[in-house]
Length: 64
Image 1 (cartoon, one colour):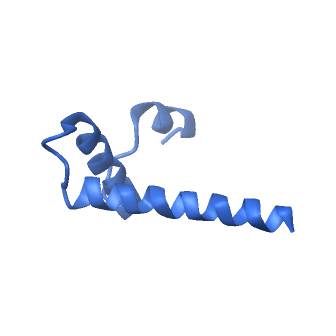
Image 2 (tube, rainbow, N blue to C red; image 1 turned 60 degrees about the vertical axis):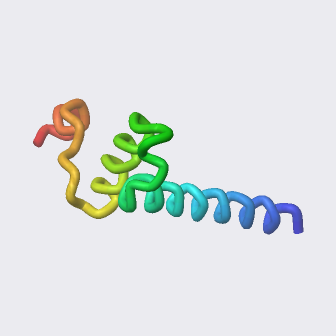
């Protein structure tokens, strides 16, 4: 029973993180309060949508 509760807490945490990325990154809410965080979330939202360019280090590791 404890494993199920732990799994549900992890799933809810991931869902909250995705909602945070959407609200701050895509919609641009709270940009006036934390512009640096909003820019990072916007970049993460682009990557989640498949629109972002991969980081230089990752392309170097993968050899593309």
